[in-house]
Length: 253
Image 1 (tube, helix red, strand yellow):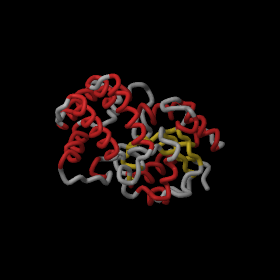
Image 2: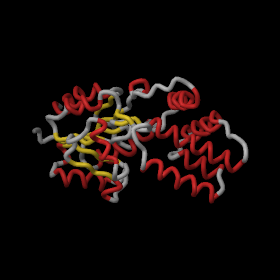
Image 3: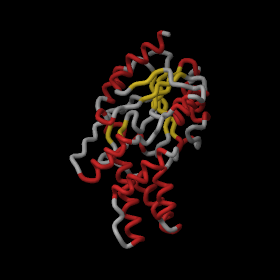
Image 4: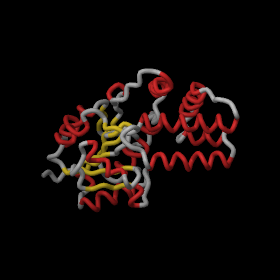
């Protein structure tokens, strides 16, 4: 076993969360309609999403909910979303195609998780083909440290007894994965998997509208402003199949 550690984010790195977020937007549409007494067009909700993301807002569904729901309605909706996310299953979450095979290819390295996820999520690892793959699982819900807090990364490194210089973080966000990993002394690979390669292909309806909205404006805008913070990724992949080669090249430098 190599003394190099590879740490992974989960959402949209190993597991596709697009349908989960679609369901959150649909729940917001229903909540707005219930309060107003008339249906709120889903396309209008997606237009609000895109405008707010382009303005640099994070957590835009919460911002939209605060604007369009009463305080009591907002609190009830947030509670419902939290319950939904805690209990999300195979119908909302599924592995990125090929993820289990790529992890097997990387089994010569020590593998771990650094992610903001519910504490129960590792229970789904066997379903996704990840059972027994990860030696360290560092979750915000278990440690009390939330990304981008570098203490979450340092917690994982400490449990792994790993020097940061021998660790690589793989994640889909500059702000939450790449930058804090590099500030912890690790190297980092930005995982921007193209929509078509993530394995969710809705045939039509509001699901397709949401996917088209994602294509226009991704949830995480890994933009030049964040890159200029001085912590650019050491590698970038757009398909998981590229990861073993990028890791090998990075470690050979």
